Structure formats: structure tokens, C-alpha cells
Image (cartoon, rainbow, N blue to C red; front, side, top):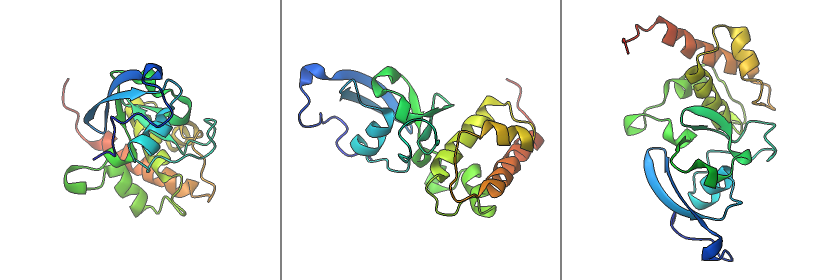
Length: 178
């Protein structure tokens, strides 16, 4: 699935690399990484998972949002070596069996929650994190909790419709006792 995940980049001394074990989209990886490698650069350049976008590279736009252990983070701000033992989920890992769309992906399509599509992977990962957190109960709360993800095309009403649709479906589903 990934492009040469064990290869150390040219110019990096083996002594500089740090061994990291993590899982990306359910696939366990054992990597030697330079300590300055951001999670975003690991995903895009080492693992060829280009769904996660580099927008501002300062943690201000949300285009790089992924899930780490189910929580949303800006991958441009997180050093990959700090994630030893973590489970990372990118937009590529959200699809279901056989490539079936995740409910959020399906809702974004149904509600036309994208225009150019550049921010969409980060919006969807952030929305999944928001749902995992369980704090949003209303459209206003969704709007506030998604405020770290910028859409330069202005598809916000449709993005909110998509997330609200999935939130309402989750609320109406019977919960299994834990």
C-alpha cells in the first residue's frame, strides 16, 4: 500500500533517525524517521498518502487534519516521532469495506459539501473527530467546533448540512450498552 516505508531519505544519517512504530489506516508500520519529520510530511512524502493536504503549514487552516487515536489534529504541527504506538487515520482510511463511502463522505457528496475539494479531506477528518468527541449537539455547536477548518470556496452551509445530517443519524440510532 505504501511507497518504501522503511527507506531512510537521502542525506539522513542512520544515527539521526528515530525508530517509531505506529499504525496508519490500520496498517502497522515500523519506521526510522528523522526527528524533525512532521506527520504531514511522513504521510505525503514517505507513505504517498496525498489526500491529506498542506495548506498553510502553520496549523491555521485545517487542510492537514487527520485523526490520531480518534482525535483530530493538525498533522503539520505534530512531529511524527512523538506518535510512537499511535493509530493514525487519514481520509484514505475512512472508506469502508470494498471502498464504500464513509457516512461523512457520502453526506458531503449528497449535500455538495465541497467545491474545489482541497479542504474536503481535512473537513471530513475534522468532522469525524468532532463526532468522536461528542460535544456537538446543534448546528451552532458544529459551526463553532469546525471553525478551525477553512474553506476558501465558501461551501460552509453545505458542509454544516452534511455534518448535521450524520450527527442526526447517529443520535437517532439505538446505542448498544457498553
